[in-house]
Structure formats: structure tokens, C-alpha cells
Length: 111
Figure 1: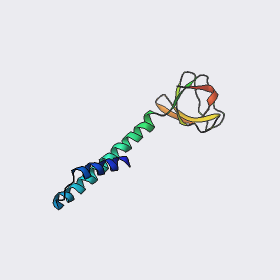
Figure 2: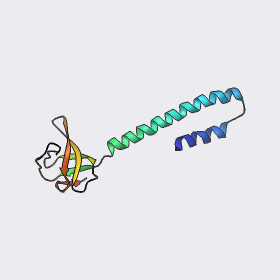
Figure 3: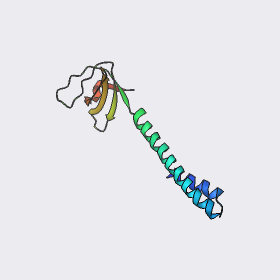
Figure 4: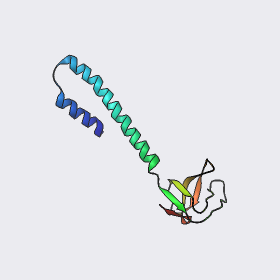
């Protein structure tokens, strides 16, 4: 991991042979590595949450099955899975309730 490599490089640069300080430095190194890992985790979560693709709905769609999402023209859908060519999975907030399901790709435009 890049964070561990950077910490190792910094510690090697400032290291000395004093055994008491070396033991103390090892505990500090562990703390630094934990902090770096937490920061990286927060960044990954932010990327997942804030950079999900969104689409604009061009036409109303009434679901025919329970797993389909009712969409209305003008809504913005957060896409959660776009691995299929014709139907994507997404969620839309309506009346403070999040609705999830599949919707036809031809009814939306990517933002």
C-alpha cells in the first residue's frame, strides 16, 4: 500500500539506533498506519457515495413487475448498477422515501 510505503520511507529517513526511541517509534508507526488507512477508507466511501452516476428521466415509466422502478419525467435517478445493456438499477427519492428498482435505459439521459 502506498501509505505504508510512505510511512516506512519517512521512518527510515529519520531513524536512529537508540533502542528506547525505536520501540516508541514503532508504536507511533502503527498509529500512523491506522490513521492513513482510515483516511483512505473515508476517501473510498466518499468516491462511492458522491460519484455515483446519475441520469435524467425523459419519459414517465409505469412498472409492470415488482422489481421495476416507477419514474417520472424530470426526476434524477442515482444509478446503482449499469451492467445490463437495456435495463439499469437505480434509486430515486420521492416524498422523503427512497424507491429502488430497474428502469429502461432508453427512458433516461446520462448527466
